[in-house]
Image (cartoon, rainbow, N blue to C red; front, side, top):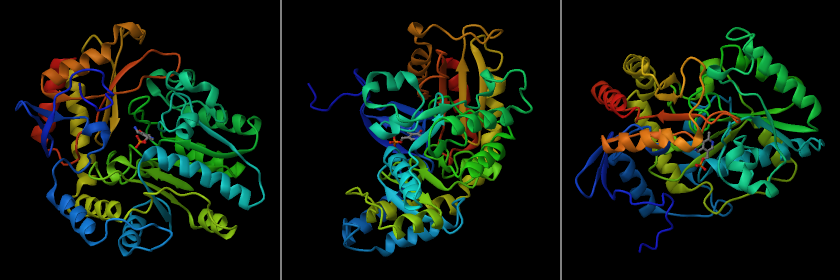
Amino acid sequence: MSHVFSRAGGDLPVVARARGVQITDTDGRSYLDASGGAIVVNIGHGVAEVADAIAAQARQAAYVHPTAFASAEVSAYADELAEVLPIADPRVYPVSGGSEAVDTAMKLARAYHLARGEDRHVVIARQGSYHGNSRGALDVSGRAALRAPYLPWLGSARHTTTPYEYRCPFPDSHPVGCGARHAAELDRLIRTAGPVAAFIAEPVSGAALGACVPPEDYWPAVSAVCRAHGVLLIADEVMTGFGRTGRWFGGDHWGVRPDILVAAKGAASGYWPLGLVACTAEVHDAVVGAGGFVHGHTYSHHVVGAAAGRAVLRILHRDGLVTAAAERGAEFGDGLRSALAEHPSVGDIRGLGLLWAVELVADRATAAPYPRQERVVERVVAEARSAGLLLYPSTGCADGVDGDCFLLGPPLSATTAELAEIVTRCATAV
Ligand code: PMP
C-alpha cells in the first residue's frame, strides 16, 4: 500500500517522462496531453531552458524570506510582467498558486477599502464559478456542489448571473443585449448585498462552466457597473492568463482593465508552483500607506519561482506562443466542430484560443443534460485515456444543471499535426 494520500482513488499510470505534448508512463504507453495537466502547461512539457533557470537560481540562492531580502530576480520578473499585464504601472505580489492568489486578492480589496475609511467586506462572484479550493477561494466560488460539504464555514460571498451562452439566463434578449442584462443583475446585487468590496470573475470562465466566452457587450457593461459603485474588479486569470486564449490575458479580448488580477497555472507552466496577484499602484499605495498589508506566505516572492516565471515569459515571447494560440486555436476549434458537431451527444462546442470545451447532453433539441448518475463525462475521459488522449473534466455546468463538459487546453506549443491528432482521438472517445 502506498503512503501517498490518493486523490484519484484508483490505479493510475506512473509517469516516466514528459516532452512537448507527450507524456509517457513507466509501461511505455504514451499520451497526448490535451489537458495541459489542468490547463497548466502553456509552454509544453520538458523545456530544458526552464529547468536550467530553476537549477541555476536554486544553486545561487534557493530561498530568502521576502521581509528580510529584496531579490533582483523577483524585481526583474515584476518589471517583465508589467510589459504584458493589463494593468498600467502594476504592483506584483507573487505567491504559490491560484487559490492563494485569490485569497490574497480578496484581502487586498478589503484592505484597500478599509484604508480609505470604508468598511466594505462583501465579495460578489458568479453562479457556477470556480476560484479555488482554499477555504477563502471556495467561499467565493459559486459552484454549489463543491461548497455543499463545507457550508457551515462558508457564506460571506454573494453570486450573480454568469454568461453561459448555451444556457443563457436571459433567453429573451439572447444573443444581443444579454451583456447589459448581466450588468443590470450585478448592479442590483451591489445595491442590495451590503457593502461590496469587489467583484471577481474569469474573463472566459474555465474549470467550472467550461470555456464560456461572454457576449461582446458583457465586459464593458460589467466593468462600468463596478466603477460606478467603487467596487474593485478582480480578474481571475488563473486559467486564461499567459496566452491561453490567444491574447496575453483573457480580458485583453475586451480591453478589461481590472484593479486586481490573479494568475497562476500558465505563469510557470507547471515547472514551479507559482501564482501572482497584480494590482494598480492606487490599490497598492492605499494599502501600504495605511500601515502595510498584514499578510504573507512563507513562499511568497520566491526567488526560484521568479526565475521559473521569467524563463516561461522568455519562451512565450521568443516562440510567439500567444499568437500561435490565437491562430492554431481557431483551426483547432474548426477541427473540433467538424469532427464532433453532428454527434448525437454533443450539445455545444465553445472556446477561444487554445481553451475549448465540449458539452455533452442527453438531448440536443432540448439541451437536456444526462442524469448525474450516468457519469458520462467520466466515461469519455476514461475512454480518451485508453485511446492515448488526456482530457480535463470540467467540474460541471451551471448550478441546477447536471452538465457534462470536458475541457481541452493543450500546450500552446502544440503543432498543427498534434492538434489534428488530438481532434481525431477526441472524436473516437466521445
Ligand atoms: N481560479 C481558477 C479560474 C482556476 O481554474 C483555478 C484552478 N483550477 C483556481 C482559481 C485555483 O488555482 P489553484 O488550483 O492553483 O489553487
